[in-house]
Image (cartoon, rainbow, N blue to C red; front, side, top):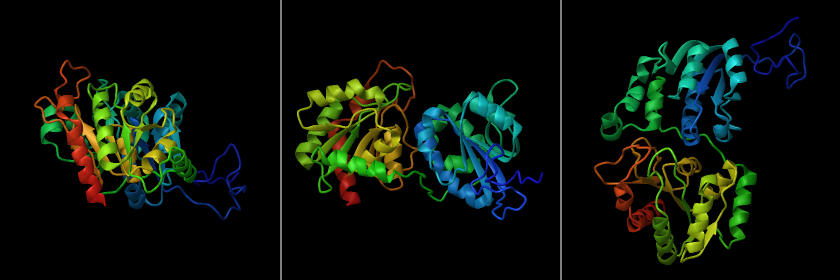
Length: 369
């Protein structure tokens, strides 16, 4: 039987999209270079890694890109026009990929499971991080040395590094960074839903809608701001800018957002905490500006081109690329950034006042307008 196994439409277990046998099919399209990208999480990091897809497609055309991702981060990649096959990281995917052959394997993830997969998969060229015979992570190519060093030296990461995450990743795979942006699009259905949802609360396109994302992360101490800070900022935005303040957050912020909403001295719109990524991004897209910590909401704002004031307390801002539509507000204290999982100090939070954040909001709004 004549089979064109390298055709990007061939399935084997069922008819292809053209419902034809290989021998007489005129729609044959070879995959070209087979490329495997491994970036499992976190979701914000997965999203900002998408900026590398278009340059990879252009360099290796024609090519076929497979991206392996954790299930919890997959939603930001669904429907991406540059990804030919999206695979969820699990035992089945690991076994299947070991049977395949790739021309290029790229692992952007500094985790043991991702590095192990990059090590096991057959590939002609490998970039990023692998797993040594000692069970430790190491760079698969010389250009990735700096990327690895950032995780090994606090002095380099916190004080000396001036490169963005995008610059570092492009350098790791021998590509020139030209300010390529995130590849992500809110669905039309999601955007219409968000507009109608906000309209039901009296928010029109003429209003200055400011989104306040209250989420942080359990991974690092003080990655999120205080409830008192959010209250004071909402009051300033409402009274001084006549803005409509919209509360944003995820499942971790249900109780936090309820407290902020119930104790607020000014009207707030609580958008709930169980929105899909598409709806959450659509709400952000409808805002004139959002305030967020170093978290997914910040990356979604960057992706949908909504101006963002980003708060950096215990983490560093140098690696964030705002593409001219964002400003970082960092804690000016000696011990920050620290990336500590726990801390008995709160100096970094005290240093970032509502008044300071408000001034940055006004500046950014004026700059964008």
